[in-house]
Length: 247
Image (cartoon, rainbow, N blue to C red):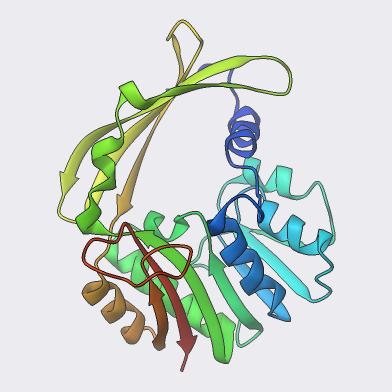
């Protein structure tokens, strides 16, 4: 559901307001920025508004940086700077061949690969884009941590856009089917009047099945961590943070 007072461009701006890239304050952002800084060529799959690659350029990265995302409004914000290649597309649709030292999927974008066929096709395409030995760095929420149980209207909040508009937002889980969780995200006026309701299905993972998908696509798992501080991955971890290598 869409109200013409809240556009796709507004949604992209809201994303930036809620998710500023901060490698100092956020361990997640530091983890990815450090990986990008150490790679001469980077393919960021699901780049969103491009903030990670913007920061990489600001910090002096001189190599090839490519951001791919299926959301045109997100890429419009990414294209505010032209020293990065921006591509409208999906992971499965990638047609690169051995061109990158590193591929990344930040901000749990990996979970958007919900359909199993799409997940497999996407991993094959990402592997093909990497040179032999190239790295693939991504994170996903651990299925057993059941993070979706905290997604409810009571945990919503209010955000103010740069133009002064205040917006309320909340999530509500609609169904859970094994590793697949479908939820709605509502953006509303301060009085609760909805402006946009979108629905998303995410795939949650456990290491055993996740690593099988990676092996099938030609990756070997190099490291897996349970938090962004590189703590050990355990049955109680909320995250599965993976560094894999193209074989």
